[in-house]
Length: 271
Image 1 (spheres, rainbow, N blue to C red):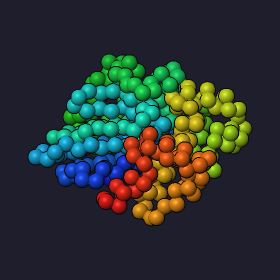
Image 2: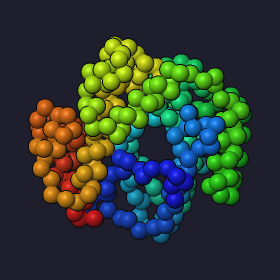
Image 3: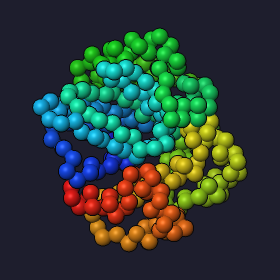
């Protein structure tokens, strides 16, 4: 179920031999029109692994702030620069709000870069009422009701419109789909803005620099190509993604994914 939201990107295949049995529910639901400028989508994950072993799940990072509510507590997570790893076991679930790049700045009212690689309690942004909302969400019987509750909460607290936030969000959207945007200079030329101003705007509104965003989305693209299961020309792939040579691509891929491109391709073939 994706509720009108595009397919998930950056989800890593498990290593060969990893346990994969159990019951899983994953929903991604679009926000109402009033929140389209600040919320990318809502996400709900539930699992039941009772009687089976724990399972490791990993994803590559995205340039988004998340509000996550689960039985262990409720946190606002800034951009995580490395791959995200979590171990699922037993029975549980998480409800999350994925804010658009630039969309959380108006709620936070300070540079989003202060959240990089860290999390804070929702009360630090929304006040004590945030704890009450999380309790209601966790007790809700279905996905659509949780989304409705979260939407009502955010709509009544919407910050004033910010043209710069929307502009930066549009830049990130373009980076995600346009392969020709490979460098900071490409981005600066497209939007007629200096690289220095781009750096400042991205750190203020997104939480990290534009070069990082470009590199992450190009790595997402690399995963999608490998996941397709077709024979790969690794040198050509590196060039297509904007790398100077194959060695630099392999280095970045291994540092982020945890194995070489060839090793990851073997995971895909084994799956």
